Length: 164
Image (cartoon, rainbow, N blue to C red; front, top):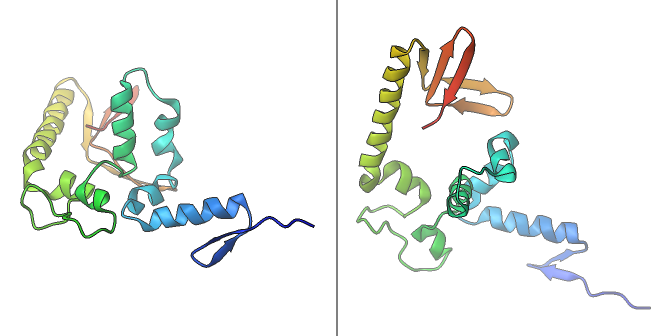
């Protein structure tokens, strides 16, 4: 009788395709990419645009948006992946270059962050001048977690949510 050779990975015998997929998923979640990947599956509605797509985005922008959503855009820390290569921010910061650092902390992205804030204030003022009641950066507690939007515009007949 023939018995197929089972796959052994790091001393664990994997007996089915499902076990192989589960093990590889956990290995990936242990990598530096883990934060975005682990949370992405927890809120399906926030990622539904990935499945549907949109004609308003080019293919390149769609891929970059998906990478940003999943926290898999290129960074030195991500590229190093456990190797002893330089993974410090190339702008001179004494921090590891991660997506979080580049988007929210690094001095080189300070101006775009402030500009984004000014756009939110500009849109708020414009909406108020047009008769909207505006709620800036409200937080909504839902069954899937906390949702934070930049602006929520209210009129008696409609509500509009804006994320800049």
